[in-house]
Amino acid sequence: MRTLYFLPKLCRAFRGKCFVINVSSLLRELILHACKFEKLKKRTAEERRIVGIIVDQLRSVESVPLQLPHPSDFACRSCGPQNAGKAGRGLWRK
Image 1 (cartoon, rainbow, N blue to C red):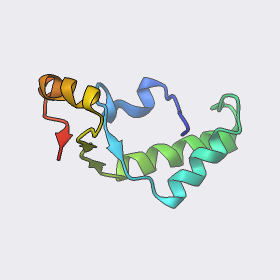
Image 2: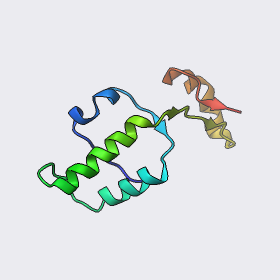
Image 3: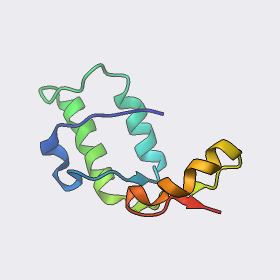
Image 4: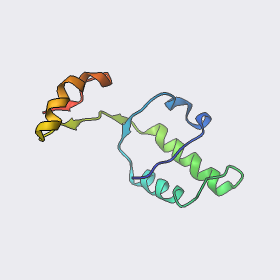
């Protein structure tokens, strides 16, 4: 798993949102390439283009519903139902 952090002004459309997406092959390779840099700098044309393409790709993907399987472990199963509705929607799926 890789993590990228963006300046808020680059991702205004995503402000305050948390979502799951299907990552295309192109986006996966761009993320892997971006992670080779300690920090992408907007002064450098190549690095600025990488960020631009990643942001464009993120804007074009659709989010997918997060579906967590019903836990099989008894201890986990016992705490699931009372917490299922706390995230806005039920998370447990049988």
